[in-house]
Amino acid sequence: MTMKVKASTFCTAVGVALVVTVAFAGVANKAPDQVVLDKAHSKRPSVTFPHKVHADTIPCDTCHHTQKGLKATDTVEVPSCASCHLDPAKPEIPSMREMSLTKNPFHKLCIDCHKKEAKGPSKCNDCHKA
Image (cartoon, rainbow, N blue to C red; front, side):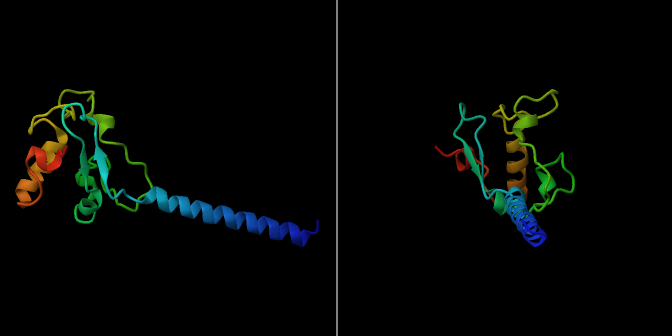
């Protein structure tokens, strides 16, 4: 094999690897259009959360409070809400298992915002659809 062929083969391999890396990075970066919240499904129907609608108008760290300054284009891994809020390590951390409007983290954050902004669902069956 000549040196020219080796160099050409190497450049092609590097090019393909770069294209694949960029393609997968783009997919990994993309914030989801919707998120299904289903950890309390045994108590209430799952909620399909319109993530994109909110991500287009609200700063990411409003909800992703452990990642201050988070942007939709960041390449960091975002932990699920359930990683801290399903079975909280401390009693002061709101639990997703709570049904209460004042103790469930989604109920507190979402409904409080919807009421403050005077738009969006604020009743159980508005989000928990069978």
